[in-house]
Image (cartoon, rainbow, N blue to C red):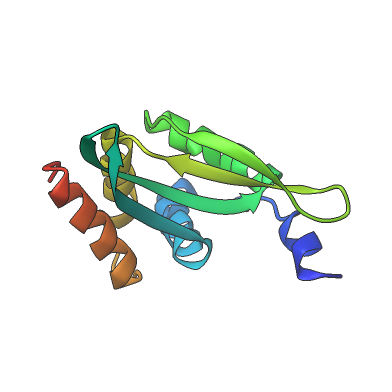
Length: 130
């Protein structure tokens, strides 16, 4: 099977709640990202950023419940893939949501991709949020 077909049908595993943040962090380190940019809109300069990851719609449905339970606002964009399937692209863009995601993922994390955490921290410092 083509990788996109396999990826588009992956479901969220049944894991103990104490390992959920570690699992999501590992998934994010592999198939997620954090992006920010300086934006000039109609003469108003700002910095916009978002935390995001791509997964199957089944996976995103379960993840959205976890994210929602943390009180985080998110959006999901469905992206067409192959063979009539689609993938879900989850985004968290509010400062409050990004701070909550950061705390949830990194609070007890001994292992993570340093560059991704540093990018998120850099953005939050630029926004005077940490």
